[in-house]
Length: 177
Image (cartoon, rainbow, N blue to C red; front, side):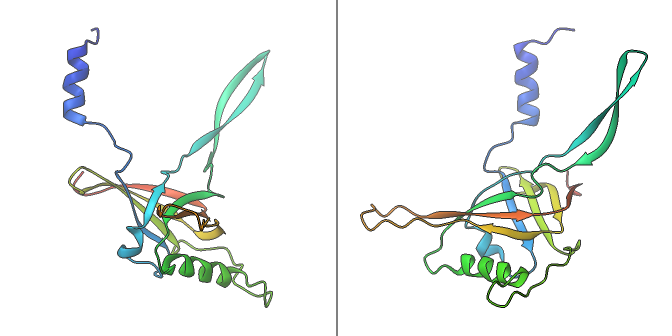
C-alpha cells in the first residue's frame, strides 16, 4: 500500500502535532519552588536516552550488540527562566547552590542525590491536559547563568539560564492517555 497525501492528512488530523510550548515543568529538586515560580520558565528540554552499541568481532564481521543505557545531557540539563523583578526565583536557586557547597565555609551536602530529588516534566495538549509525565531523578543545581543589565536598554524583559544534573529519567503515561 502506498502512502498518499490523504493518508497524511487523515493521520495528522487524528494525532495532531506536538508544539514547542507544550512542555510544563511541575517540580524541580525539592519543595522550594511552587507553581507560580514555574510560570517564569521560558524554555526547557525533554531529555534524550540512548543505548550504547557494542561491536563484537567474529570471523571478519562486526556484530552490533546493545549495551547499557546512556542519559546524554544528564550532567547539564538546561532551563531558561524569565527574571522576575524581585529576583525571588534566582535567590532560591542561589540558596540551593550554597546548600550543595558553600565556598565561604567549605561545607555543604555533597552526597549523591536520591530519588526524592525530582524534576517533573508534563507534556500537555492544547487544553492543558497532561498527556505524559517524565521524571528526572537525583537532581541538583550545577550552574547559575548570568543576567545582563544595560543602563541604555529599551526595557526588554531579562532571562537567565540554570543548569541542573540528574542521574536518570523515567517516562510515565498518565491514566487519561
